Length: 239
Length: 183
Image (cartoon, rainbow over all chains, first blue to last red; front, side, top):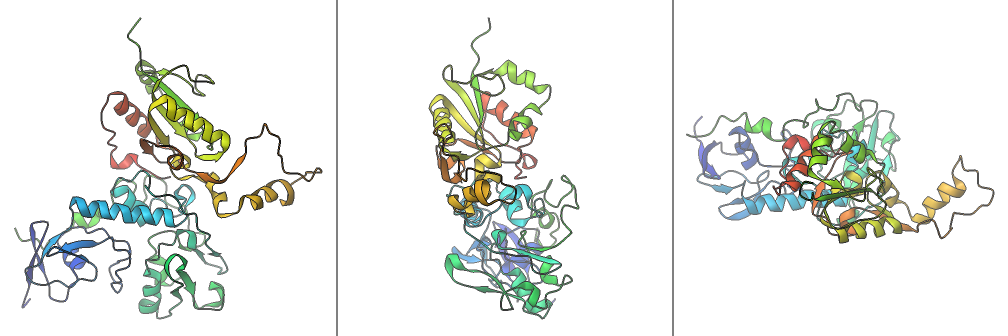
């Protein structure tokens, strides 16, 4: 390794490599920065704003900010925790999230994030938007009620599957996931083996006939908060 | 006679009584709860009206009609601490599935057009004894101020017990990770 940077996150000195994004360097050091739209292996997107940190005192998304030597980052501080809670609560009221019968419950990153932040109910009024479901494909279901517009499926389909099946249409409150066909997912070249189906953080893009196979108590986030897998696995801290 | 115990009221609005079942699911710890509180208005002792001031009110279910709103406001008036229990109270729950469909369409489907409907009168029930339906199903905190929320469908018995004991002991309600669940 010819060159490493030293950056400080909440007072902890960690190593970072030139070209890394801040969130990658933090992950490697076992420091969890909450995120929903970012996923390892996908192009950084900066959509959900959950990973917003203070970089040298200025807010920036950790998933898109490149590391620089001597950076001073604030992450787990009260003002940002509050800000993140508000984002999560807004996501809950902007969609129609019925956790009690959702196939992804227990494995859902949005739900897990709310658990991690100890949210018991959102402070904002529910919007109850009308959202379309696309069940036309024999093996895949799109339920836009649950979509949080993270763009993971867009990026995975485009960059990994090489298909570009999904993309956004509309603006603001009307923005939604659309498919690369005149109307239905069944008319695209989407396939059940697409990586795009494995990256959805919520229950918006699902493989049919695979639901409820893991019993309650053994699901991903039943016992341990989201992020604990990163917090227990860091090695690039400088003591 | 021991000193006067604080009073606990419970109700199920637009809910399924599942949260009350979960409350019973604390098993023999219900005896500890009985040591700590007297039940006031509640389906558990079948008191129909409040007999006085209550320390805690547990609200299951959101508001889908005007009667729910009236009961909920009555609970707010009589209870020092009002707690939403369950997903219906905290987010509308299953009844709120109708919130994405206009009310008239819901009524038409239920009483006129549904595939299994037998309704020779061709009318939607409109007896004045039947509470007027609201345009949407509202979580409890969109109708009155709610002090604590215990989500879950239903909230685990351990969650209800832990919260009750904390509230009755004037302790902060700080639930461990495993006890806050939305399903």
